[in-house]
Length: 308
Image (cartoon, rainbow, N blue to C red; front, side, top):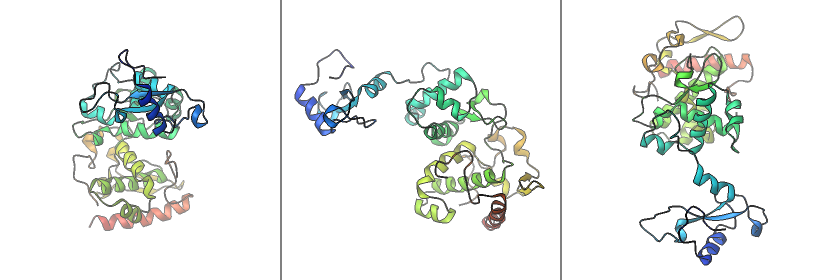
């Protein structure tokens, strides 16, 4: 098979063979192997840039081995142009083709759970990957400096994801009642602020007691939910209720207001302080209400120290 993206001159057989050998007769996107590497994938050699300005079109550096499915994806992947959403050039530098598919699913179907989005996108992506991309879309204003709002939000009542005009009560900027989620959001926000300040990731892991490999995920999750950490220093701290959970005294942020108007922890405001799959929610410190409440008291002590 040769590159089918154009009716112009074909890739010379010798260069195609050399590229295939260099790539181990495997797709360089998904890793599927062709028959000469013990697999069954049909392999193509694809031009990375159809019109390179600094080298010949058939230069080996401009060629890559792809399987049939990945080659189709490269030439038919969505661009978001069919959606009623304006994407800036900086937006497009961050967004992946998968993101446009997720946005399209929400546009056509309305608010959906992470599982429902995963079922409808029709791609070989894990549910965790879909969740991570939803975090990116829900915190895109952190990723793109020129953007003032994210693209999606999570509804605080239903827990479903939707485009901003589909979400009645956004989870973003709220203080959750659930103690475990509350502690998770605090830790995530401290991690996000530390990363934003350029702190060493190993130091972040040591100080906040997180696994270093989860820092990226915690940072993106924090951007999606924009926990109002500054409110804690103004006395807005959850207290235990008779069910062993928590309530929050004086919580103006839980009224469904625009988080950009109520949260003192916006990306435009100077920061106040320096489970394996990171599901919703995940284990943070304790696995029981008792241990979570014990650790909560320790956390409050740390917060009091941070505020001085």
